[in-house]
Image (cartoon, rainbow, N blue to C red):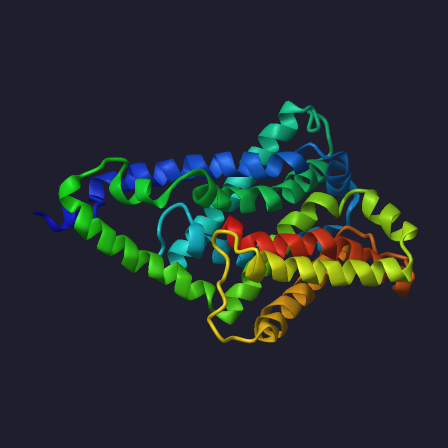
Length: 304
């Protein structure tokens, strides 16, 4: 039996597998980006937000995409160069899908200022590019990629052993402390981009009292911990027997909430929500946005 058949992925099938990954990426960009592509506030932000802030958002998205590409790219990556390639492709898919949908909806028309067109596409490309990489994990199984969509009974034993060996790598990475925090940042950013541009964040913060804010923080932290360590969703951690509850709480949950608050602050600042706002009210904005952000951070393991 040839070595390529033992591995379950002949070289002739690799281009087809990559093209299938691109298709899933385009579908993921559409699936995860459509809520923001149909949000008027995000269209307006692409027009009037300060360009240096938009540039920083685009720049901050690059390492997150490289990280995602290394974990769930269009095909299994083994080097940083491959991860960077998949990240660039995802960004390109995000730009193309965003431009196409905005043109379809009539939000980009002939005669518009070039800066407005670029701004609208650029801001929409951030969530769309993340969705492009999430497409592989959400819209296709790894078994299809590995076996080229065909089943060979003679390779079942070898394939099972290989799958066990390959699956061990992501699990090992996922337990890395830096990897955990990076996952939380991606999840928080993605969900924050859905709601941060809306006026409801400001409206809710003005309705809340300091006691509401304190309760929101406590509940946000509680939900984060429950998502990962209590209700045992698929993909979450199981605490080793004998491990005290406070170990995970202080090592992962609280730092995860701080990451969520940091991402919320960055997104609000990028969108100009914190300009000419008192520090106490700005903190209220961050706490409100950190509620969905913390859920996104906790659910990142489920998505990825």
